[in-house]
Length: 267
Ligand SMILES: [Cu+2]
Image (cartoon, rainbow, N blue to C red):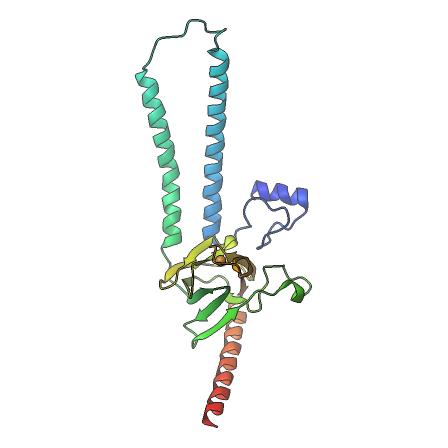
């Protein structure tokens, strides 16, 4: 269990495993994918290294300030080189950097290489809403807009609730194609460890595998204009059966809409 969220939970009484930001939150959201757990592990590892190095340097400075002050050391040494010391203070940092680089590259590789996908979803950023397409499901697609403050229902999270959630299956490798229709946006889901730029005229790709069914909230993370703060991303993860049921429902709705349109054209 991560210590910082635990302490914060004790001090502020917030929910530990919220997949959304909570009041007085410091640090990261609870991870809900394997990639995000790896990100947190690397972060914790680097944090420990940083802390140890900073304390070591601080102690060294305190020692030097006291030990070599004018009163304690009236005749300073004339020495200007020390081969052993210089080798050490070059060599040790190199070793530290290598120790940090290995897990770091492993993680970059893990995020970048998309495992065999169970489904593909296409995400398109617009000023200022998201569009989601399910290319494997008869071109099913819909838009997702923020619910404004005056239309929020009990239990809705302000600025993080939308009319149409991005519905996805949990425990599946989801291949995500990201692009934009107008300006730069960024598809970011903190609890899944995903942040991918949405660039007009270009298709970026990423992936995630959601641990368990639930609601996950993210936001556009690339300043894209005045509505940038008003285009949240809400992922609703369902188990396989519920997801298949949802897909079937959406498809029949789509077919009905197509029929109505055709009839109007024929008439
Ligand atoms: Cu934006």
